[in-house]
Each structure stands twice: as C-alpha cells, then as structure tokens.
Length: 325
Length: 143
Image (cartoon, rainbow over all chains, first blue to last red; front, side, top):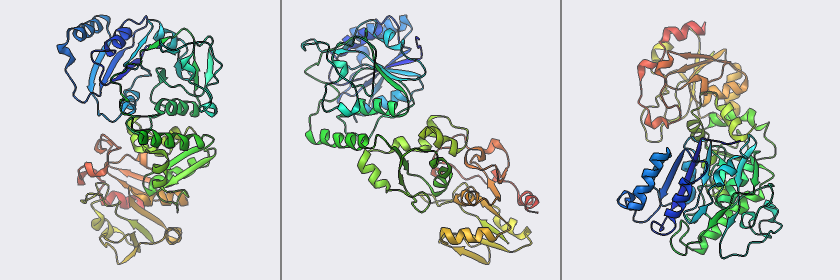
C-alpha cells in the first residue's frame, strides 16, 4: 500500500555545508516523493539558504517535482520539539530523516508499502559505512533494550515485528506524542515515541530493502551537546515510562468538571495508574509526581488534544479517544 | 427549593468569566419559590440563603433535596449530572454539545454566539452579555 499524504521532516544543526545537502538531495530523488519537506533549522545562527546556489537549486527542483517545501527557524529546544510539530501538521504519515543520512532512492517507497491500517511505524536498516554489518539476531523488544543493539544497525533480511525503532523511520502521525519533557539532547526520544505507538495498539515493523546510510558527521548535529546530566535525566524518564509499560498512565491536570466527565471513562481503562488534581473526585497520585516521573505531561492535556483534533463531540468521548477506550 | 450556582471558576488573571450568566438578578425576581445559592468565598451573594464552601458530600445532600437547579457552565452542572439530578444550564459562548449533558435542559440562545475556538483559556475570550437567553425563557423551563 503506497501512501501519499506523507511529510518528510529533517531537523538540522551545524551541517549546512556538510551532510544536510546530501540528505535533501536524497529526499528529492526518491522513487516515491513526499508531499512536503519541512526543515527545522536549529542552528544557533541560522542563515538564509536561499542565498546559496546549491540550496537554490534544491528549492527549484522541488518546485519542478511538485514537492512542497518549508524551512522553519526552530526553537533550539531539541529535535523532539521539532518532530512533535511535524507530528501534528495534519499529514497522515511522517518520514523522519536525520541531517547526516542518505536514504537510498527506494526507501520511502518501500517503507510506505507496509503502511496498512494497523501499522504505527516502519523502519529500515541504518548503515554506518565504517561499521561491520553482518546479520545479527536482534529481537527489537523493549525488555532487551539494555542487552542488544538497535535492530536498524544491521541488515534486515525479512520483515520483523518489533516494539521500538531508534532512528530514521516512517510513522503514523497524530496518534502518539513525543515526550517534550526530555532535555534538548532528547536521549531515547525515538524509542519512547515508537514504543508509545506500539502501546496504542499499532504494529512496529523493521523491514528489508530500505537502507539509509548514516554518515555520522563528526561536526554539528542536533545532539551536539554531551552533558551527562541531560542524558541521565532523559534515561530516568525513559525508565519510569517503561516501568509502567503494563499500565495505562492517566494524567488529569484539569478542572473538577473535567474529572467528573472522566469518571465513566476510567471504568473502561485497563490497569490505570492515575495522577489527578482532585483526588476526592478521581483518586490518584499528584500531578507533580507525574511531572517528576515523565518530565512532561502535555501529551495528556485533553484541551490541547481537542484543539488538535478540531473536536466537536463531548469531552467524555475525547477522553475515550485519548485513552483508547 | 431550587439551587442556583451562578458563577464559574474565577479567571486566573481576574475579570469576569464569560461563562457567567449576566441576568441573575432579573431571573431571581421572577422565581416564586425558595432559592439557595451555592458557591465559594468571593462570589457575589444573590439570595438570602447562600451556602459557601460546602464539602462535596454536603453539596450532594443539598442537591438531593432540591426540586431542580440552575447553573452556568461550571463544575456544578457536571456534579449534578454525576448525581443523576437533571437541571437547567445557561449557556453563552461555550458549546453544550462538547461540555454539556443531554440529560439537562441546556438553554443556548443561538449557536452563532459560540466562541470559534472552544479550547482556549477563558481568559482570552471576551465577555458578551447578549449571548445568553433572557430570564423569561429560563422561567418557562422552570415551571
């Protein structure tokens, strides 16, 4: 099944004149083109690339090929913030491409072949040229994340259902949210995001014949800071989330009336762990504890969700959609 | 006995909550039975009997004793719905299809008055008196 309403999203920093042009060239030479390419420019001193002839040519080629394109000055808060914007731009699918990667020309076409109604994300192999790449048995299960390397680092010879992906992939938009509580290094953001898609009932696939080359550019990069504390903080959020993987996390950071409207929904949620503002209405742990555990609770903001969904039905039904019941 | 809950939660930045019904004084003059106002400290007293800061359990007991109730779009309408006690909700710019309950009498003057974005903070929405139904229309549903 080939999907057409696909946004390609690249976040970039420090790579205007190294690997970013290679990534853009690879995107616009795909056998299946995305509907739009959006580039989030996270550079400390962003430049107007319309003054650069290579980029001018890229923009003209995209115009000729009918690829809409957009260059956005990003907020310098980390790539997860940029990806969350892409996630909610109204496209059915988003193809994440790193700014130091070169997807082979058939990647988007082959990834999108798998995008049936029960699929949440699809990823292919991500090869680093200097690494030895031999088929290796990797489960892709979240329980094994500390024991095995990422499945995308190796040749993928057959379709394999996994629980998470870690790098460039195509995903169903507007279903799960990126955790915006992660630091600007956004350690584990891809894993948390794809696992959330899995948690919401969608299948995650690692598939063959979709190779992306990762140049591992030594300079620049969206994660160009290496502060250990930030990685530790993100790792803690990751562990707190994974430790509750058999539960449904419910966060009610809203008014008393909203808590009452949520009451009939709670009965239908399996294994809920509730954080609530009004425990006299919905018993639960404190909102501050939810913030401490997960870093950010915006993904449970029912008003932001209703706004995003252009909601016209009852709040109770919106809660049901948010919690999948 | 009728309960009225005239006011929605105060806005964080102050000012009048646009969900508040502006014609309570006129409406109360038309009602010919005992009325108890419920609310919290800081709200204007409109009736002789004003029960403030009741616990949820005391509020539930009071609701069980009333013939019916009238409220703006606030916590109280959800609370009574949860208790299974239908009443009258006075709507202005918030949408009863989103925030209301069909078990209640939802008095909305016209959907053209609904604010175009229903999910903004009420701090950002201007007060409009003309968007609410007249007291006489409320009274007609009270009898």
